[in-house]
Length: 397
Length: 112
Image (tube, rainbow over all chains, first blue to last red; front, side, top):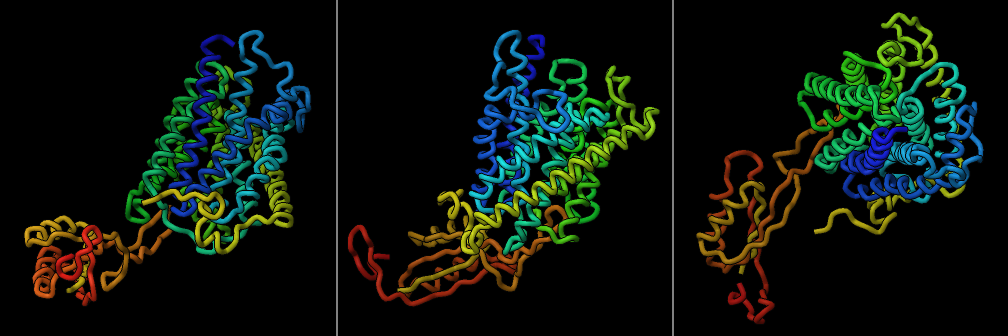
């Protein structure tokens, strides 16, 4: 790795780290004021626990050997043999991928908001990391799904579809909130969180080139465009449908666009990011209404934004992938004369990730429910999780 | 001695404070309040879901006065807080048994 690339990967790692606090504010602002600290803590807890687990065994299971079909082994326990020797690329990669491992379980927190016991979350995160995140990550990157020909540039399938479908499984076991939904307690916090997320997402997507090169620059540009186009689409759909252009619509659209471009960022060019963004913005704006139709209580729309957005972006690769532009080793999409082969592989990869993650998450949640319980008491739910679970209040006089 | 309690629209607070000060009132207590009356609430839409915001933000003022001043205080607040639209608020006056100024221990009307 040349020094420019090493610099970019290290900076990108810090950018991705910053996304978790960004996500915490994005979710925290949407949450009730009596539960905002619980939401922040669910997110920050991932930043405390996952790096340590990643160091001990997570990286080893996820990456070594790279071509393991289903799961890696223990060759790099405690990062054995990963040193500063050479150019530092190995260490930088461990750090970069560790940031992704930290934010992925954090994505699920938005669904379980307002009622999940923190002790249950504390155990859910490591179980889900090892049983759902790392296996699916391995299948997609170097494992059997990747070997078959599906592609996922920065984690559409491995991260957003994976966490999004897990969010659905989690809330099905957890049950609905007693007091139902509520308007966001602080829209300015939501907007700050959205800005941080967008900023950090340049590291997430453009950093995933793992080099300072043309593909990184295109991924950067795609991240810029898709988020804007999706935000625009969401705002205009709401404006026409509900009568107002809302801040929450802009924020939700931006995040939906970022999610959708994630798997495609290094594989598409030209107008593709704008089209992917527009499609994701419109589809996700309607997808967040699925919860009232089907009756699952996904508090902050992790399913509607991350699962649906990730799936949309990942499947659209099957249409927009352009290997000749990147001089890349992947199949052409339908619009570039490649036929349906890539689209079929994308569908298969997402299908496999969905089934695995959904079933595993259900089992984890059922096991937790039968042992320590997954819900706070009625009193804590009505009085607020901040005080009951953390002994803190977000807003004092 | 009287306790005058007024519920007014939040944006009228400065006008009411200035008018009371001009009328010689030396102290008021202000609380941010929420409530519903004939004005009702409104709906807000987030991600396409409508929420009824039933409680409207209001400001509650509390003013102590002598029996003789109370009518004038009510009059001043009424003039300063009125917009003529629904939701302007209410004023009510209650009798007070005793008042103590903590710093000096003064009691009764002297403590107002």
